[in-house]
Amino acid sequence: MNHKYQQGVILIGVLAFLFLIGITVTVSMQLSGNASSSVYISEYSTQALFIAESGLERAKSRFSQGDGCLALARDPATGYHNVGTGGFAVLTAVEPAPGYCTLSVEGVVNQVVRSINATIRLDGQSNLVEHFPSLADYSANWTTTSTNGLGAVGWGADNCPIAICTTSNPASGSLVFETNVASDAAIFQAGVKRALTNPFETGPAGMSGAINIAIKKDVLKATALTNEVYIYLTDSAGGFADLIFTDLRRTTPSKRWEYINQVLTFPANRTYDGISIVVNLAENATPRNNSVLAQIDVLEILGTSGTGGALILDWSE
Image (cartoon, rainbow, N blue to C red; front, side):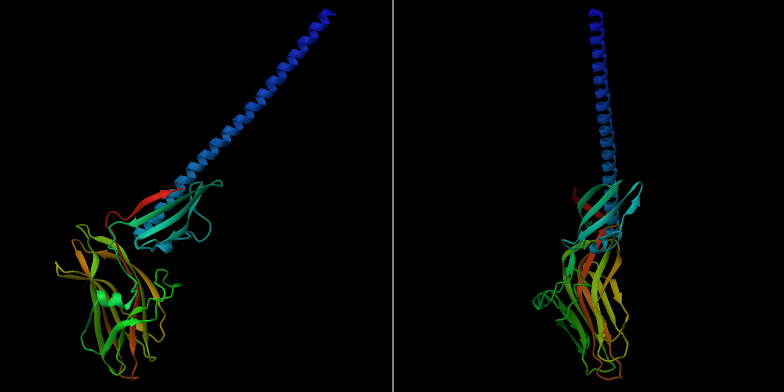
């Protein structure tokens, strides 16, 4: 009896031991699986962050090469740019001030997403921005010149639509050059100039940058004319007037507003302290009274140092 009892106790002990071993192995496997999964998620997360930073670098490079801030948004239009095992997308871009851009960039690897919010700015920006907000501002800051009195320079109520010029000041009006309808077969030559609020130096390496401008040309009659708009930056101490923008396109009736972006290259060792806008508006002899005008609303000139490009001011997740 005692022998059988002892065998039963031993069997129960062995079964209990095996049960405990089974539980231990199961728990251990679960913990190992969870740990392995956590390691993979952590690795994917790190990769996604690096890829998001790649997207930020792409946006910064485009910004320094002259692309406007708002043009950086939704890059690509759908999906992601592929990078390694994942991809990135620039989701939003907001311009808090000229020469600055606040971005939201997303990186993804195996459905693990990391997001970056960052503000970048152009290094060494010239800080010249004109939205022509009012007649008072125009009168106070710009000097008007006219070579022949065959037209007028002033303000018009028409302004570049927000749909075309997202940085336009709504209902601000625009700077208008217009010929005198009685001056047939004549050329109206005029300009405006002012000192820069913040003069800037291009340095020994020169400087690159961009110009954004909203411009409109129109003519009363159906005769296409070649009318000229020039913009200069001036260095009064050095005696330089460097041409940075030219529009020689023909003027046609009811021409719409256009928002133009061009990359600039500034010469070395300039100290720019002024700006001039000059027009030559030509009227034909026939048909008569074909008043011609040129309008400018938004004018932004941004410069970046030749080596610096755009800088990342801050970023966060």
